Image (cartoon, rainbow, N blue to C red):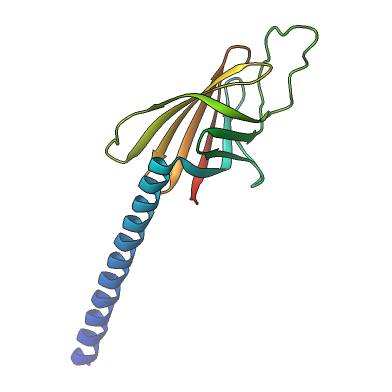
Length: 161
């Protein structure tokens, strides 16, 4: 009976070691993919939740994303907040939906658990700063500031191309 218990404990120990090693390998692969995506400026963030300035955090459908392709930012994000003064000829779009060339990048050096990037974009109706924190775990946090709207934040998962 003691021999059986020792064998079970030994097998449990071996399985947990293998699982930890597999997790470490997956983390290393994810970290490498995120680093390569940052260097090539080719990534997509699938949005999971949003944090409006005036309202509580909300989960969103999996249809929303933020994508960078070299020098073009594709933003298909929901928006909930106050839109300030606009010329009467322009109606604000619903959401942050556009595809525009990037005016300027501000990429900080790699931090302990990922990267930070600032992307400036100008559309017909506003100028935006997307401040993005990329974690090596494959998660991202986005903060959007603009001249004519309340700030808003998003959380999502990085999909490296």
